[in-house]
Length: 440
Ligand SMILES: Cc1cc2nc3c(=O)[nH]c(=O)nc-3n(C[C@H](O)[C@H](O)[C@H](O)COP(=O)(O)OP(=O)(O)OC[C@H]3O[C@@H](n4cnc5c(N)ncnc54)[C@H](O)[C@@H]3O)c2cc1C
Image 1 (cartoon, protein in one colour):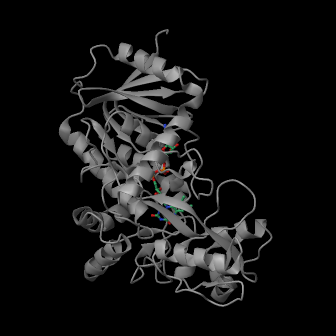
Image 2 (cartoon, helix red, strand yellow; image 1 turned 90 degrees about the horizontal axis):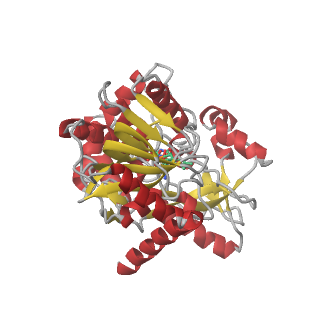
Image 3 (cartoon, rainbow, N blue to C red; image 1 turned 90 degrees about the vertical axis):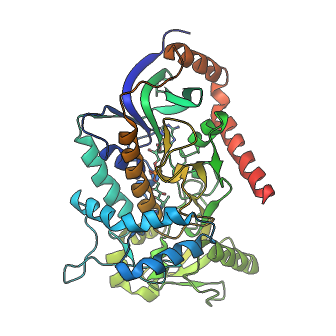
């Protein structure tokens, strides 16, 4: 194999969603940062988030925010991680506002809060029904202004280069099929969830859990990788492709679920897993592939002001949700498990961090509380950056003597199975998920 193109950087970040961008924004200005993404920079689940981002409403809200998060997570959460997230939340929101994020405000100009399933009070900040796009586009704009950050699109991580449990960088595959080796002092996986492994998912299809498979290959510890959240309400369609989410805040604001007979069959703000089970039971009873979501009760004004994009998207399918009931069905949505990390987002491999949905820091337990994931991604992205700074960036990693040789070896191995690599990764992850599920 010919020489592989190699670049040297201080930190390589795999993924350009909210978690990766926020990590980059918290590294020093003189750090050389390379970010890669498998697709277009904007094509991340962070851009898709609709409902909002949680924040500690006021000091009195602490116990209730903690309890709501633990209860949704079936008390399998790491309490210390939840504590960090809640206590950091206001500071994160202040930063977002400073980056120009425009959260909804009351007529008096105060921040407005909404509520979603399993929240015992309104503590979610939002921007219409496109909170993710509002937050992530502002973070991306801030990163794009940094001269020390380079973003490479359509560049897919296919392996890491490591020796003696120390990560020395990654091997990536570029759009033209050529390899690119990125030698880095520190590596951060910010590679999102696993929706691309499922037939019905609200996620981008290119999010296939590659970092998990690579971690498994290199004996990096995973945690709870069978903990996958199904969202109760995605827009029913007989067409293939990404399922469009109907945000939980629609039910939080008062929309009703109805069976074939038009009657309500559940409390609409139950935790997601319980709600999904109720909907599936009703679908079975009705012998239909969907149930109805009645948004008409919210009134045209609220629908058009708070949920304009859901309104527009439903219209594309010929449904006017101010007048018609919307057919909805559960779909894969979020991944609570992931690469095991500590409270500084460190994995069990030296010089390797994981942040956002690909990581498991224990915040979500068995089931995520609505609107906790953007917050968790940002809090632990910032913590990864802080730890990277603390551990020192410029020290060379004690790794393969010849980085090029190690990259060539990895590339040769991958080339032999290139056509089938994504299928192999998929099989590995799904098998491991099943194995964990059986072990319960
Ligand atoms: C429809 C929808 C609505 C949601 N609504 C909310 C909400 O209201 N509130 C909330 O808190 N959360 C919500 N979420 C969840 C939240 O959006 C995500 O959990 C969060 O944005 C994840 O951010 P991330 O940075 O970890 O990953 P992502 O934003 O998904 O980014 C992953 C990145 O990794 C890249 N990548 C993946 N594999 C590779 C590879 N091998 N090589 C190179 N790059 C790679 C991708 O291209 C992408 O850039 C929602 C999710 C969806 C899908």
